[in-house]
Amino acid sequence: MLKQIEGSRAVAQAVALARPEVICAYPISPQTHIVEGLGELVKSGALAPCEFVNVESEFAAMSVAIGASAAGARSYTATASQGLLFMAEAVYNASGLGLPIVMTVANRAIGAPINIWNDHSDSMSQRDCGWIQLFAETNQEAADLHLQAFKLGEELSMPVMVCMDGFILTHAVERVDLPEQAEVDAFLPPYEPRQLLDPAEPVSIGAMVGPEAFMEVRYIAHAKQTMALDRIPQIAAEFQARFGRDSGGLVRGYRLDGAKTVVVALGSVLGTLKDAVDVLRADGVAVGVLGITSFRPFPLAAVRAALEGAERVVVLEKSFSVGLGGVVSTDVRLALSGLALHGHTVVAGLGGRPITQASLERTLRDAVAGKLGPLTFMDLDWRIVERQLAREAAVRRSGPIAENLLRDLGAAAPRGS
Image 1 (cartoon, rainbow, N blue to C red):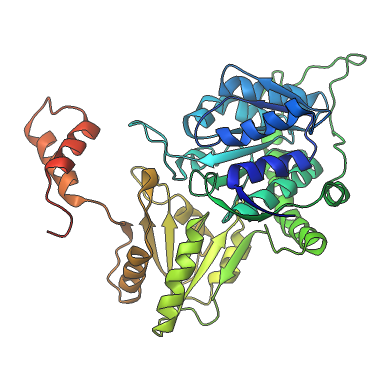
Image 2 (image 1 turned 180 degrees about the vertical axis):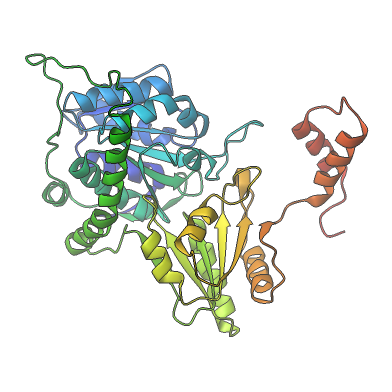
């Protein structure tokens, strides 16, 4: 059924179609509309049987999800930014216990300073926690990925994050095709847990494990991620066969044929990148795009196969590792090990900074012309950065960085003057 609907509400309705039995949530922008929508469905009786648990924190939300999943209930939650960090201990517990919880992460910057706008710092901070991470390009894909996430997680008995760009997707109203309940029921079978807490047969889970078995437990989590590399594209193919949409999978290329320069990215920026590439292609510049849907497990073989014909790779990052550079770039370089390619990392969009088509076109033209360095911060205001660094070098008590930058920005001349 086609609907003109906000992204968060579309995700809420898609999650409801998966028939979750326990939803636990704590509000934090920009994911709040998702759990509000689900709360309304539970209260009205449209989603039943389902228990909606209002908790006192994000840590509690994940803890309730862990308990519910271990007791045999299909469980769901959502968070963002500092909320994900607050639940980090429990996030690791969920994956260590092999519980197939599905969680939406409405990607948002991590403070300080406080910033509610979009980048990928939150999900990237948890890249080693053992959860599958799937990134949506559009609201349609975000809705579709949740249905696939429940199927994937429950088959492998491991948790799945579906990551969608905060505000850019969560608050955008656009057309989304939501399937009928019977169609989803045919695609997603009822939850049959691999492990189950039963009062009649009490057992402890998550108890102490010493050196004799801990490495093996962690390896099993890795082995399941490796299995997911096979199941993710298979489930995407099953989804396409049933619903008629190419959604999900490991990676997706755009205009890669003959592309000498390929830009790699995740999430909603892929749409703007495709528009920029269309302009460059019209000018005779051989550029393509590779979108990564599955960030964890990282599809090394698929990325290598897509990029091995290129001469230059530009990785567009919406987060970065302070003191090193790109996060996604590190994985891409591992995939391309041994290939003689020029590699560039471009950090953009941090804290919601607009990523414009004009800036992307300029950056990609610089890359093709050999003018792009190994690490670039796109549209960074060097004037206020250099002023703050000079201030810190000259004055011991130089004051708070963010507030100084804002004052300097207010006093600075307009860009381009």
